[in-house]
Image (cartoon, rainbow, N blue to C red; front, top):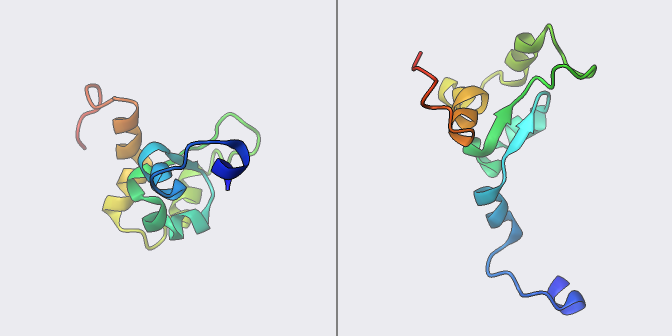
Length: 98
């Protein structure tokens, strides 16, 4: 509708396709987002603690993370908790494999 209403160029693909390639999503407490991780793209999700904001779960961040990711395979959890941020922020040169 935007191209008709505002004279914008029509998109060649669905907006969701652009989001899957160009956006990253952060969470610190979003069980539904975790359940939809395959729709969103596991490679596009990054966990955060939101520290030092007062709405953070710190000092119980790890317990909250474990509760949010119950049933998530370890490789997917590692992507969301570490690997995606390492790739996005180009930190691979300072991070060693565990």
